[in-house]
Length: 274
Image 1: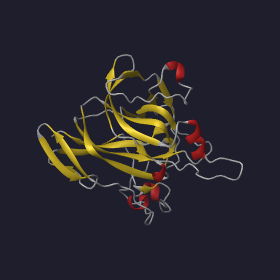
Image 2: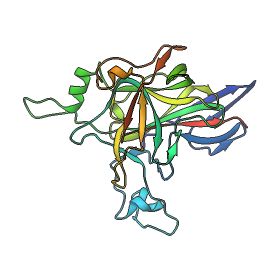
Image 3: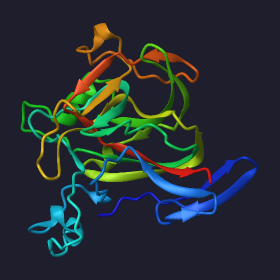
Image 4: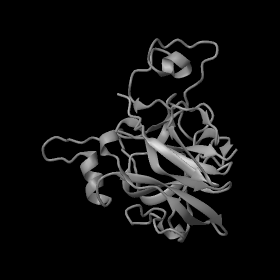
C-alpha cells in the first residue's frame, strides 16, 4: 500500500510564494528539488518496505517495484537501508536527536548543500511486533513502556557550533509513527522550513522510533565508516533511556556520542534557492 501523505504545501521566502504538490513535481520555478539524507544507490520506494521485489529486483529498475525482477543494463543497485525491527534484537533510536554523519564514502550526508526550503520529510520504519504470546510483551509494548510512550519523531535543523555543539534553529511537528510501521512514509509540511547552506538535517525522537538500519536492501552490513551522532554528553553514550532530545529552539547542545556501523533511515525534500 502506498503511503505518501500528499498535501498542498506553501513555500514562502524572499518575498515569493508558491504552492505545489509534494513529491510529484521534479522541479518548480523557485529552484531545484533534491533529497537530503540519501546516499548514492538509494531507492526510496513508498509503501511497505517488505513488499516483493522480484527474483533479482534489488539491482533492476523494474525489480525494485516488484514487477518482474529484470536486472536491465541500466538498473541500479538498491542500497536503501533496511531497519532492523522486527529482527532479534529489535533496535530503535530512543529519546534523542541525531543526524547521519556519513555512509561509507559519502560524507556530510545530512548537511544542507544549498539554501532553500524543506517541504517534506521521509522515514523508512521497521515493523516491531505489536502482539505477543500470553505471558510476554510485544516489542512495541516494551519500547512504549521503557522509552516514554508511543513511537514518534520529527525533523530538526541544526546550526553547527564549536566543540561538537549544535544550535536548534528550526523543527517540524512531531508525528506519531505506529500507523506506518513497516513502511516508507512521507510527511509533507504545512509550513515549509527555511534552511541555510551548511546547516544540518537531524531527526528528533522524543520517545522511540524503529529507524536504525544495520544493513541495506542488498544485505550488506554497514561498517565503521557509517556513523551518526546523537545529542548526548560523552558520559551518556551508553545510557539510551534518558531524555536528551533537543527540542528548545535556539538551544545549543553537544553531540558527543558517535555511533558506528548504523544508519538512520530518514531524509527530507529540499527546494533549493535558484
